[in-house]
Length: 147
Image 1 (cartoon, rainbow, N blue to C red):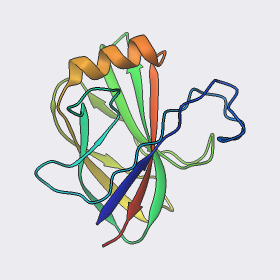
Image 2 (tube, rainbow, N blue to C red; image 1 turned 180 degrees about the vertical axis):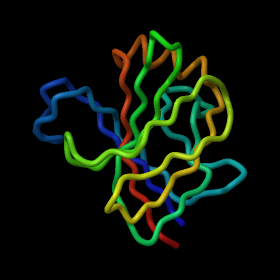
Image 3 (cartoon, rainbow, N blue to C red; image 1 turned 45 degrees about the vertical axis):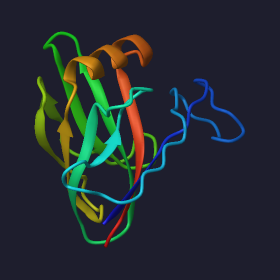
């Protein structure tokens, strides 16, 4: 399986290149190939070592989807979920993360992706980046290619 991660950076109102979008978007990130040992780095700023890696997925075909991380300040945790590309579209169940480790994110109904396996390698750095740079919400767009 190949995974391409794409995201664009812009203003809250969007740009001509990204169209109109209500939230801050991230810069283009393209990763091809997936190694279970290293995984594809996602949800990371300019750090040289990724905070989160995609380590595997169960998919029956090519798919585009978004991975979202919400910061829950009351419970001191991050909530990961998979989203359809459309704003206010389908959403997979949230998975609460409170430390480094391996997690399985279920996808939403109707997607060719059943689940996405990730490894959080730097929970503290991810927490700080989301709080300081993304106002409590971070989203990357993933393109998954079936092998």
